Image 1 (cartoon, helix red, strand yellow):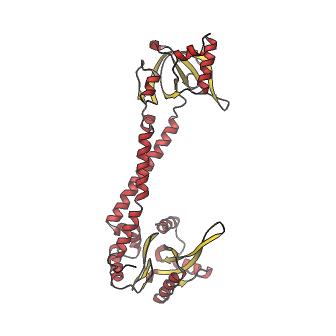
Image 2 (cartoon, one colour):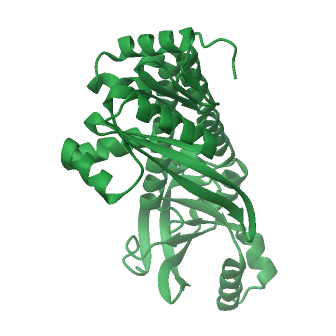
Image 3 (spheres, helix red, strand yellow):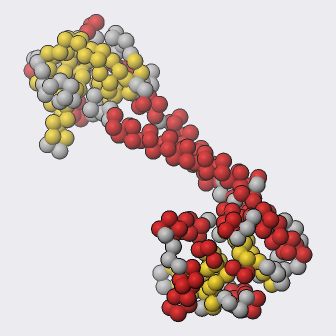
Length: 347
C-alpha cells in the first residue's frame, strides 16, 4: 500500500491505459510484418506486365499477382476441376516465341472458346504441381512429343486467373485496414486518456452526478488527506467510494449508491481448486454499475459494512426484494441506456 495518495486516482488511470498499449502495438507490428512478408499490396494492385514478359521471369522477379495481355490463345482441350466443378480452362499461346499455359475462368473464356485473339486479364503466377505436370504429360501425348521435350518448351510456371480471388482479396483488405485503423484509433484514445485522465470513462461516467473534473479533484483531495477505509485496491473517503484495481477504475459518490452485493468465484483447473475470489457489485443512481472483481472476502465485507453505515439507504445483499426496490427507484431503462450501461460496466 503506498505511503502517499497524492493524485493516486489519476496515476492509476494512467497506469491502466499504459498497460493497454502493449497488445495493440504488437498487433500493428504483426500487420507490418504481414505486409512485408506476403504480397498484400500486389493482391490489391497487380503489376502490369508487358506482352513479351516471360511468366517464369516475372515469378523470379517476385511478381505473383499480375495483369497481362495475351494474344492468339488456343484451347488445349483440358479443364481444371475441383470437387467435380470446372474451375478453369487451359489455353496455350506462343506469342513472341514464348510458349505459355494460361488457365482462364469459365466466364472469361465463355466455357471453352476454341480461340481468343486478344485478352487482357488479371491473375496469379503459379508454380505447377501434380495437376499441371499431368496436363503437360497429356499435351505431350497429343502432340507426339516426349515429356522431356514439352517441359523444355514450357515453363514450370503458368498464369492462373481463378487463383486471383478478387472478392476474397477485397474482404481481406477490408479486415486488414479496418482492424489497423481501429487499432490506431484505440492507441490514440488510450494516449489521450494517459495525458488527460479526466477524459477517461471512469471520470466521464461521473457527468451524471456533476462536473467530472471537480469530482475527480475532490475525490483525490479526500484520498490524499486521509482515506477512512483502505484495502489493496478499494478506498472509502468522506464522500466517495474509489476503486483502483488492475481490472478498472471507478469513483462513485457514496450518497448515490443504491445497492451493493457480492458473489464468489471458484478458480480451478480440472479437479484442482486454486482459490476463491469475491466480486462486489455496486448499483448507483443514473444506471451506474461498478464491478470490483477478485478481492478477498474480508476486504469486501469490510467495504460493504462501511458503505452501509455511511449511507443507511443502501440495500445490502442480492435478493429479489432488493432488485425490485432498485428497479422501482431507477425505473426500467430504455434499450439505449441498457447498452450504454453495459459499455460503462466493461470499462
